[in-house]
Length: 462
Image 1 (tube, rainbow, N blue to C red):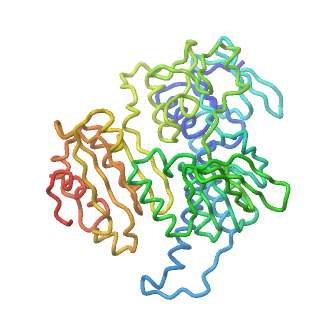
Image 2: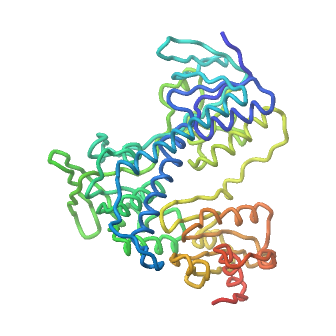
């Protein structure tokens, strides 16, 4: 039996980052993966979707070349080539993880791993079954597309995110059920490519976790782009017996039947915790989440869990941060528990959405006396010059102490801007300190400074 200091189960952005940090800290490390290194994020999620979205954005620019004084005739697209490019980007990133494993002397064990008592992992592969042991075993098996009873996925007419990024043929009509990041990103991509898209959302607003002002702005932008939005609506059944699919949608006005070539179910995720030995080892679970403490230790000594399988936000950067913290604690380093109130969230449609901290509604519900500032990109020289003036930056401060409670952005490029607010909040920066930090001109980031200035009645360009 091969013996390691640490075995990581799963090689997504939680697992492979954890393994690398463990190796850096001197641990003899192995990682178990049943498919491709990089997990869902690199192979079927974060990375390939961004490649699709970039193709859509470039296509949008080409179609509107005249707005920039340019001529682009006979603009079209090859859907198969767009998908192929996306898969190529994903393959390249997965190979990059293979390189990192070799560089950091991490043993990659291919196969399906099952936890055993006594700090052991049994791995089944085409070549047989092998047992490994370790002082510490870290579960990072991630999640998959969740299925609703009323919306069973057949992989053809009712699909999840995997099928959505590798369809052989572009659908003429698509219904997207769910308007979280996954649903909204695919709605933008397919609409930009020319598919007739309808988004069905159960909650009153799309991207329902975001500040209400952001949700309303995104709905306006999507409708302007031709996307049909149905909120406070629920798909109660689907009929796939014909050539396409018919979805029955329940709304406040009654039922409506929508017809499409395909329905994309984007109603959240389901953790991959089945058949990995949790019950045999006795690891505590609440519904489909593994229970852990602040340092990702389960109730069974020597077994840990990070990423989507735990109760924190199901985001790639959260999984990576949790894994690093977990192994640093194992190494005896002094570590602080992760602040889940300062985790940025990003949605990569156009306009992009990025946020961190409390929404205006949440701040009021918590009893804060708040100062709110807002700066529209329509007043930004850089945004106007780029031809993308939709959106704004909104900031929320505690009026008493100046604490930056929340920051909410919608516009082109804002996912690359939100880190300013994350770092500032981490450093407990006040609004006045942000105002005195000189921002470069002309940039989109000036909107952050201007929004803060608006909160304190010092805004210049409004």
